[in-house]
Image (cartoon, rainbow, N blue to C red; front, side, top):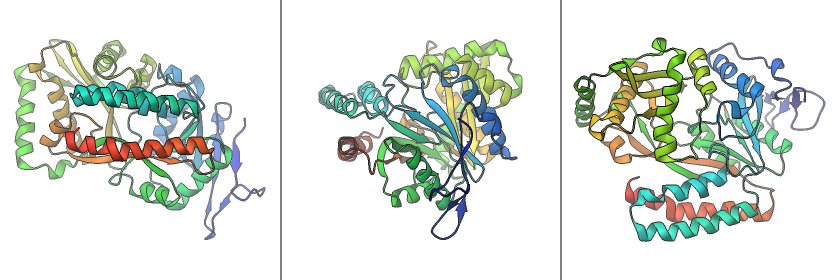
Length: 402
């Protein structure tokens, strides 16, 4: 497929005319036309080229062992956005599979409730829900700005650009449900309000935690300072981005897998050595670690966009004694990096009380789901999921402070 130019009114020109006469340029690219992409000459354009071109050329399985999807790029006024297209792939990581997110992964997380009677009831409910979701082909979805990571950070898009890129996707994939992941009212207010006004359902995905380094209360600063002393107590030194070599990659991968795959869930993105090699060579992640006596025991990798930073790579040696405090050390290091950069720290989900004690606050993250015009069974299933999550899921998150 060659690069194509999509028009909203089906004329032969290459621009999208809005009702207020503002035009938006929408263009599509795939693996065969990737060399035709004109990358923006700015930080976002350079990052997109470094990250997305290898995925287009070699496929997503080269970077993520459990992510199978068709990857395209849509540009809106030259701003590249990765788009993933799926039809089934029920064993995929949740970053591409709503079924995995809301059925498979959710069942695994029930143990966090620590209430056996509640876990059993919800497990039965989720099994029934999963059967329904597969029956209506829930994974027939197109996801916009899907970087295949736990948190998608967004470039700056205005209301008209958001509207037009969704219209372009809707015309190209009229049978697929359209999803924008990783939305919240704090970091993505324009997307939030625009997609709400366009009739999207807001399906809760998780409780996330955000931290403004400049507004950390004094008690939290004392806790952070106490955690920082652990590095000296256990003789750890910080490894910075220019201090790595390729020999470190297997250990990096092992530390991530020990925490996020073995301890948490196989449905998290399973990075490959090629993914870490790309991060090391192209800086698609800023990599930091903790060493003692020459041994690497902890790793984090972050990226930032428009003043928000997030950490898709995070791991430590879970076989070491808990009193070592590697998670606390990594968290301190991450807060220090956010403070140096002046960024809002997106701390993802989990260990809510730990993060609140160190100055973070909770926010509901949702996926904007556009199912208008799709088959009645799929719309009914998304409606049912929406009702269950707002009536049961979200109240449980708040009650149990997850």
